[in-house]
Image (cartoon, rainbow, N blue to C red):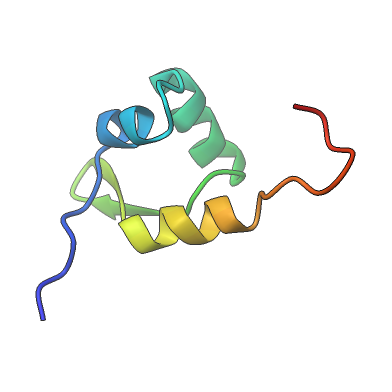
Length: 65
């Protein structure tokens, strides 16, 4: 079974609707973003980790929009 390709911070930015790259790096540094992998000196993200992170951030009733 083939795995989905890993996402770069730029790919992740696009996938999240244009979140600034600096925000993605800050999330990684603070430990608040999706789980990242270090591949050599590069950050990469598994699509399934991004989806799991997004699922954990669903806003409930009354949440700010």
